[in-house]
Length: 88
Image 1 (spheres, rainbow, N blue to C red):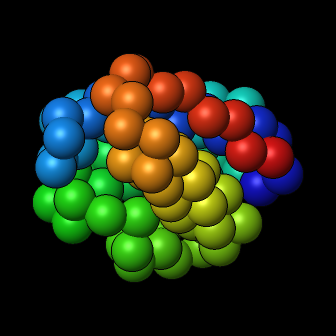
Image 2: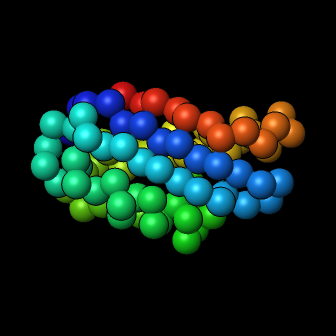
């Protein structure tokens, strides 16, 4: 879908400790219902390098991009906040 996707991540110095993915604004049911799949994949991978959800190609790309951007920003700046990033 082409709606807004929100990824919130909490970090320690070397790990992702919590992930919330909000796909409620997506336009396709499959994409809208994929948030738990993305959360689980990001936590297990401890990385933005995750497989997409079949049928939710745009959402998969938005989630990967948001997760990669937030992780890079946090660790490159030595800040450890809870970061919320929006992708469209």
